[in-house]
Image 1 (cartoon, one colour):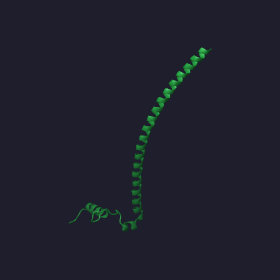
Image 2 (cartoon, one colour):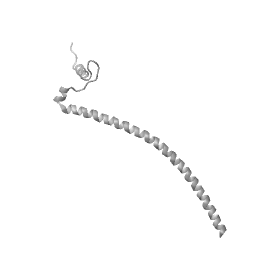
Image 3 (tube, rainbow, N blue to C red):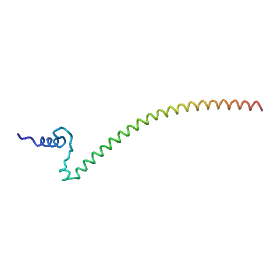
Image 4 (cartoon, rainbow, N blue to C red):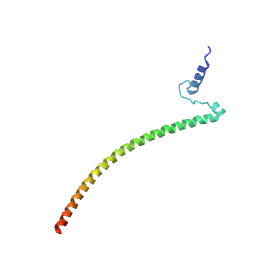
Length: 107
C-alpha cells in the first residue's frame, strides 16, 4: 500500500512528538539538532519567549486585580475624608460668624 506524501509527513511528525507509550518526546531529535543547531536553538528560544509572554500576561492580570481592590479602598477613604472636610468647613464657618458677631457687639 502506497500512502500519499502528505500522510507520510504527518505520520513522521507524530512519531517524533510521541513515543509508543504516548509520552511526549522532544519535537527535534539529537541527530537533527547536531546537523542544524541553529534551528534547535531557535525552537528553544521560541518556547522561552512564549513562556515569558504568558507569564507576563498572568502577572499583569494579577496586578490589575490587586490594584482594583486598592482603588476601591482608597475611593472609600476619599469619600470619608470629603465628608469630614465638609463638616469641619461648616463648623469653621459657624465659628467665624459667631466671632464676627461678638466683635461687632464689643465695638
